Image 1 (cartoon, helix red, strand yellow):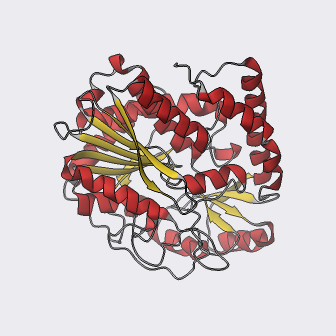
Image 2: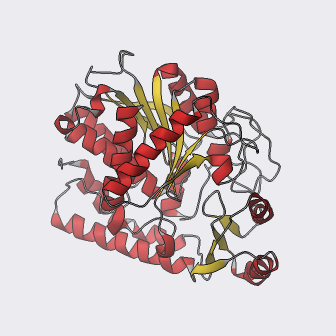
Image 3: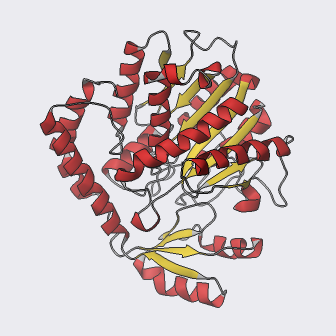
Length: 415
C-alpha cells in the first residue's frame, strides 16, 4: 500500500486530541434488541416506536433496535404483548463504544510511535484522513484520478468526490459507476468499504482492467459534518448537522431526495426529512453531480450499514411499485450476492426495499432510478457489528472490505 505522508501528522494530532472523546454522549445501559419481524403487519406495529425519543432503529427494518434504559420495561412488554420473538444482543451499548474507542486510541498511539504512515484498513478513518488520502491520490496518479469539492456543508466542510478513469477524466465515453457512502453519519464501515474500493482501483489499477472499462464517480463521505460529529461527540449520530429547530439538529439526508418526498413533522426524529425536498446542501451537491452524468450512469450504489441486503427500488409505497427492469435488478443483485458468498462472506438478501423492509420516501435510490434514469440503482446494507456494536470491530474491516469489493466488481462488470 502506498505511503501517505500526511497520515503521520494526522495520527499524531489525533492522539493529542483524544481528550475530546471524554465529552461524548454516553449510551450507558442502553440495550439493543434483535427482533424477528416476519410480516408486514408486524413491521407496521413495530414502526410505531420509530420516532419515540430514546428509541433508535439500527436498521430500517427494525430488526435491531436500541432502547433507552427508562423505556426497556415498556418495550419488552410491548414485544411480548404483540408476540414478537426477540433477544437482547447488547446489554450495554456504551461498553461497545468504549471498546471501539480504546482500540482506536491504542492503534493511533502505536502508529504514531512507529513513524510509518502506510495507508491501512485497521481503523476507522476520520474526515481529515479521508480527505488527505484523496488529495494524495490525485497528486500521485494524475492520469487516473481527479478529486473535486462538489459542495460545502452547513459547518463549512468540503464534500469531496473522486473520479477514476483511464481516459484522464470522465468524458462520457464510458458508462459510469456512481457510489456514495456515509450519508448516514454513524455508518463507518460503509465508508471504509468504499475507501478500500478506491484504494484497489487506484493503487492496484493494473489488476483491475475489467473494472476500469467503466468510469467511477465516488463520494466516500456524503455527510462530512455528521461523520465528524459521530467521531467526536455522539457515536450514534445519523443525520447531518443543520439546525432543524431551536431544540433539534439534523436532517436525514436519505429522506431528503425529490422523488415522492413526504414531509415529516417530528424534527427531532432520526428520520426527519427536512422542510422541503433537497433542502440540504449535501443532497443538493450530490444531485448536481448525478445530473452531470445522467443516464450515462450504468449503476448507482448507495452504501449503508447494516443488514447484509441488496435492495432495489422503489421503496416509497406498499404494495411496492417495482422498477421497470425489476428482473434485471434481481439477476444482478443475485450475481453480486453469490460473489460475496464465494469468498466467504455472508449470504445477502436480494429484494425490493419496501418488501424486505418497509416503505420510506425521499430515498436516493428511488430518485436515481425515477429521475436520473440510471440503468441500475441499489441501496446496499453491508455487514454490521451484531453483538459487538453498531459497526463491526475495526479488526474486521479488512475482511468485510475485501468481501464487498467482490460485490462492487460484479456489479460494475455486469451492469
